[in-house]
Length: 111
Image (cartoon, rainbow, N blue to C red; front, side):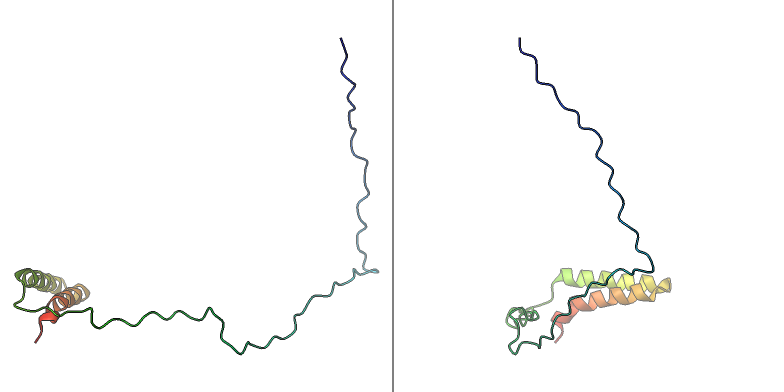
């Protein structure tokens, strides 16, 4: 039978002296910093200019035709009632919100 080769055990690393502390008599040298040269703005605008959303299409809105739908009237009436209820509790902001909702429902039918 063959015996395995002996393994070597590494000892602790040798002690290395600490770097010397800078003394006031020998100030540490300063490292110059890089200052880029002045680059004027390019004459042509960059390709990543500000985003400009497309103009809204005016042809997509079709005003309602014919008589007003009873569902619209019912919802506008509810909003008006909610506004009256809010005023009974001196809640002016809620009253205005509900009146604006009612007006938004009715404005498309305004003549």
